[in-house]
Image 1 (spheres, one colour):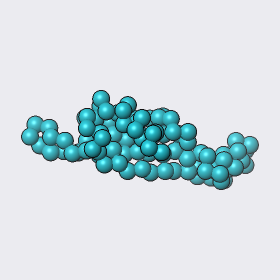
Image 2: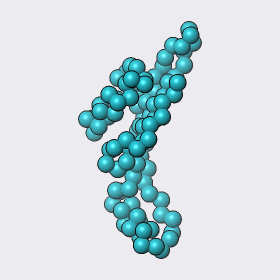
Image 3: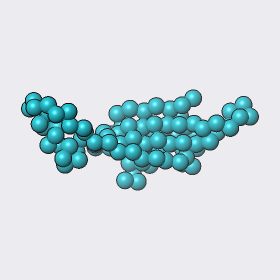
Length: 92
């Protein structure tokens, strides 16, 4: 949703100035069944079928000038299934 992405942009803005003009790729993943038979594995398989275990990866890309050289700056944000940030990485 747009409100989640706008909130993430405001968090990342100090580390990647101009993020409002950055390109955005959104990748989603789901739990992969390991084939185990434990109670935990059965619970994960059940949740995976409903799509509740997936994480979302947001990749922001922006062209920047550093010492008269154009390069691409990146911000990678991993969200849990509820849209909360669980990991963030920003290029220098």
